Length: 397
Image (cartoon, rainbow, N blue to C red; front, top):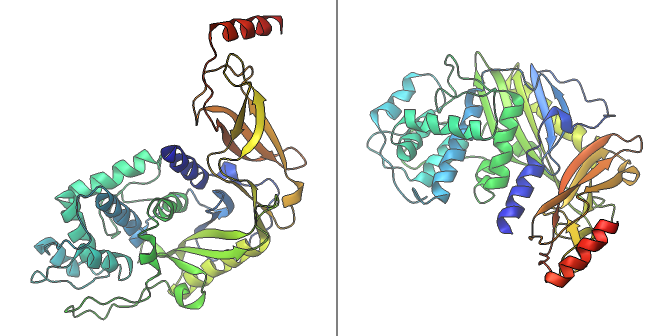
């Protein structure tokens, strides 16, 4: 059941596609960037976008995937946070490339925990190479791991050629693909996500003056708690920002209040200030123009339906994860729900078995969300006489 819950929650969060957008959207603000995307992480719905699928140079937003692969290795016990890694000549030579650095030297033996801060806070290309060699053996092996993960998520517009984000032929992504990677970090690794809220980091013994996190919204907006910036001449100024704010009116079915998380991706802004200002503009608009409503709790019955040939006469169907939907402000009470299910429902039924779909729509009938309905409690098959009796009843029916 835990695995089912995890998969269901992930499916809700990562439905980051144009098809999840609402039919009648509030008009988004003008955003001074080549492309952008704003999603509600809580629901997985796209709130606003422009050129979100246009292939572009991702610059240091690449390091989101560098970190994700490292987090995966930590979870799989392939390395530990306290483990030290050698600084190779290749990592040392990153200082010749002109990008951001943690300023680690071959004489040092930084810990994985320190290197992660160097990648996330300092955006260190040298730290990225050290982690890649520590996890993959070689940078090339690690890049292959990054690409396999992107393929597993269906990111068809993303291809990695390096672990740093420096401009290289064939190294590409999109605002939507970057959002998927960021959302996976938030949802898959909540234990490591707080690293993205660190405002300043300096490794003891390093000569660096590169201490401040370039995500200046961490200082301006207390609801912002991540994530990553990037810049190259080819990419322009890029930024991924996540913010979480309290919304006491989150529920429309008596489920109480809660928190709501939005994620913005800005690609190709003209300056550091512009990417921060446009990101802030998007987040503020999203929080003000939309409500996130909770329609059903996780593992609570949405509907009770009859079961044939079972020891029980009926089964409760529900969602393995809470059902949230983003709607224009004030429209939550107007939502309509419809259950589409297998009929007849014949035992045996296993816990977590999908037997239907919950559709949420506007009064005009436009579907804004679809969630799988699963069996909440297993229903065993009845004895031979019970099955024979129900078989006859079904035949008559």
